[in-house]
Amino acid sequence: MPEVWLRGPVDGVPALLQPVAHALLQAREDVTALTDELPADRLWDRPGGAASAGFHLQHLAGVLDRMLTYARGEPLSDKQLATLAAEGARDEALTPAALADAFGDGVDAALAQLRATDPATLADARPVGRQRLPSTVVGTLVHAAEHTQRHVGQLLVTVRVVGGGRPGRPS
Image (cartoon, rainbow, N blue to C red; front, side, top):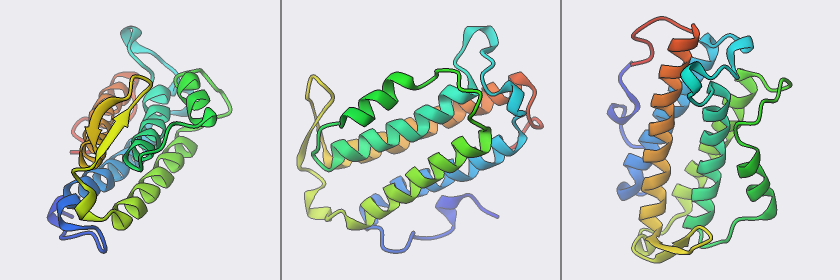
């Protein structure tokens, strides 16, 4: 099957936001494949002091949620700030599949938000973070996609190093 961006438009997503939708859907597929191969007992390994696969999986869901919040022009909630503070904390109750499912739910929420985004608002200003740094609706949405892809790449390398999966998958 071709990569998501070669499968055509995502239903209901405005044309200018199709690359965001494609990147997030590809990330979900890649995360699912990687977590299927990741031994649960290696989830929190930190090879060479690098971030664990568990951190990347938590961060994928958390940062996506936070960027969607900024895109809506809302401040982060206390719950989101607590989630941010807990990212990477070893939690033996979590499994690779549960973390992948949480990220998948985040992708679903992102797609719903993309579908509801009026293209006329893409250039609207959006403050980001505690310092309220300047961005736009489209800036926050594109960053959500590119930051997600960055961590999926790091997750892929971490999973390979700790012994999950076969070289070359996913592409």
